[in-house]
Length: 376
Image 1 (cartoon, helix red, strand yellow):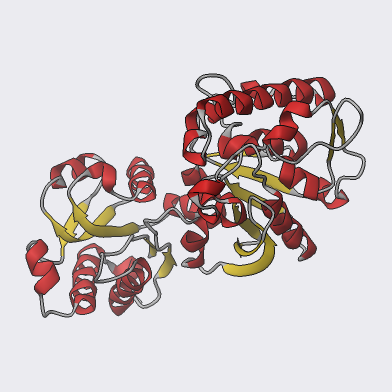
Image 2 (image 1 turned 180 degrees about the vertical axis):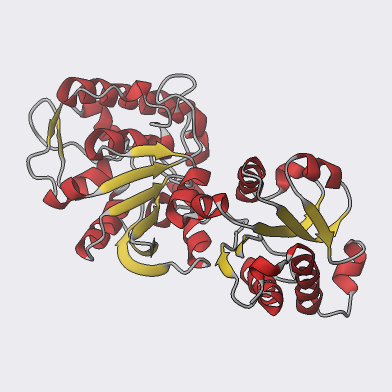
């Protein structure tokens, strides 16, 4: 029996990892030799934490914040894939309100993290763009990796949004040779334009501290960057969907590192191999705290359910309690839905051990579907 276990946890009762372990115990109590794959799902926006619960190794490195000050930042590695988040070293949270000015911030700190991973021998990178304080189109990252960006006098421009406007020429002769044997993937759910009124400067500039006049300058810099890149290396970043991600980092990495751009859900599947394991599974277990609004449930959980349903794999959802929306979940592909508690009050005040309830529930489910071919 092949079993996929991918819950997001029951808030204040069982975290996603503990819930996955309990489900595993329930399965093995009935089918000892079951082939089990656990994928605890997190509900936060940290990709590092998301993969850490799947067993990723986390590294910490001294690097630079968006204004060039020393900070320590983390990145994760799982299945030889490097997970780097822009926000770790180049994130808005490093700056107080008075310091937020995307004309001057840069992504050099993220470049230092990439360089550290290259030094450790890793070659497969996933760059998550959410939470950045920058609008430098990745100039900071690329400069650390050996690319030089020059003005009309062949002098190096600043590695920030101001530098984008002064950019005229690109010198790739000193780029890190290890980049030729490396692959890069930009991870983002941003699908807007690169520049213009619907571009990244107008969309995200205000939350990064940009005034209306500053936004116009940011956008002019992005437009100039796209013109120079097209002239120098023949890539039209304006036509790349998602190129504006991370203040234009998507464009920089696509142009100079031949990066692909994919969604956060697709990245999770690629890095974890979850999707491939669903196809020939016998059952999928998932679950969460409660069913109130379907759009508030974990996105990977719902997408995974859709994939399983389309491949005729039964999906069982185990929730802290299930009140509203149960019928909708059946319509979206769930085969069975179980509630550990009668209601929210019972869930928060019950003296019954949640681990025990969960294990017994899973045992009952496995007994129902178990037959001689799964004995063991």
